[in-house]
Length: 502
Image 1 (cartoon, rainbow, N blue to C red):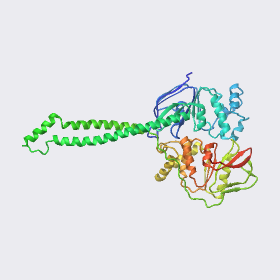
Image 2: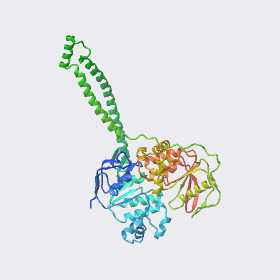
Image 3: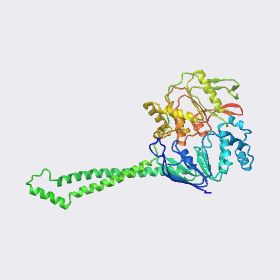
Image 4: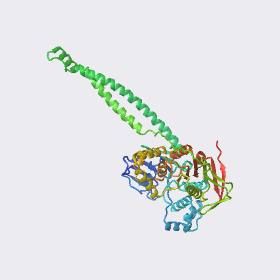
């Protein structure tokens, strides 16, 4: 069995898009973990599917190992496969169950697990098959810090060819020994982990900017020289032309003939032609550098800034609060003010999303305008979002595309897409509601499925939001950037603390 994967001269283009997603792409993967990073819509998941031979390229070929298993961003699995894994008492299965701390006792328990717990089971199932090539798409989405450590340790135990798509900078740094960076019109593989590759990418980007500036300066000089040469050639043409001479002006006509024979005046035209060729070559060179320049970013969407007229959005001063299937004891009363910025944190499965949905229902009953971003959109919900966008009036569609761009996606590629990735779905959902006058935003794991630049853009956007914000997140850096208070859920208890600012 081959111990490598080679992507050779691969070109792939979606039917709905005007430009190829990949063109003459060449990559080589060997044993160890390689990260794939890039913006939402840059083709990370598509590249993974091409490598896994789930979709065929328009041109080119993927060579190497055929023992490939891929875990996408969802948690769907067949009950028969789950049952087989759960009751498999082999040494291999037992090792991965132990390492990933799988504690589920029966198939019926699966539906009560959190999204993150289901992801750990999926990973354990795949690892127990001992495949030669493993592709993981955002494996730490929805996982708390403890579960992320468990996932990381399991990934490090794997000895085959690993391909990791992730926005988790720490995970990429800890497990990868090379990274593929998908940039607009520029795809490269760099040795080292994510941080090392990113530094090299930034150095290369500055070099490309420098090369483009030199090419632009050269082209401007040639433009000026070409203008001068054209003026000289025009004068030379007048000197050699007999137009306007009297038919009997033999001396004048003889001078014109002599100028044509000696070629002195014609030399200006030849020099002009030479400069034209050099200018055309210089312009082409400048355009080639321009195509590979890093994109200029204008990050952060703008929200409707009308302040709430209410003094309080939510107040609860009991000793415990009863949710749908959960009761939480309270260390203090709960209060949400018109400008509160609150993070809801805690391990997987403690009820964070349940609490957020309870608050959504409360705001709905009180008639308080809100925006709720769920943890996941189903495939059908993503299709409905895309249909809604495609049927907007042109002026409204332009505003939505502007919001999507400011959240880190290419508007052109986005508008040509036939289906949305989970990250693109989140950006579209937020951009569709930019001009609504809601008084509170509730976000459930908003950074999951977002690329690193998009997370930064969302941080900027929420920093500008003038109203109440509640966010469930395991991303500590994100929480500390956008919120000032924290509701911590653990052991059926909710306690509050204020986040320190440095």
